[in-house]
Image: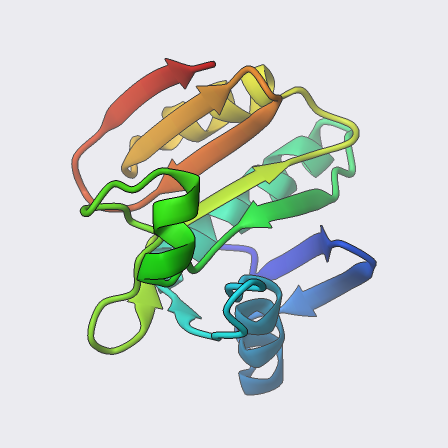
Length: 146
């Protein structure tokens, strides 16, 4: 399984190998709650799904950077975005979280969502504002939102 990710958040852009301690810290930083200044730890399966998606796209000739919209969210930040009490963006007691919202300048949200669905790892949401939600909560769900 590949462990490289090419991501951007705002003006920060990195390519990291999240299998190293330094790389895991870097991707955790990129997926932080920017509003609250809180850093957590994405679950490993979430990072594996995400990097598999990039590797699959690259294997077919599309080197796609993923732009982060949201990773970890504190309760206050989550309330501003959606308010769901069971959101997978919320960290558990160990500060681990299971969801990412992202887009790519070179791949549509529709395509990213369909690709994530192939893995059947958890929830996949396709949003008409052209971003994709993935989570690895266990139960396989798919939705479209406006």
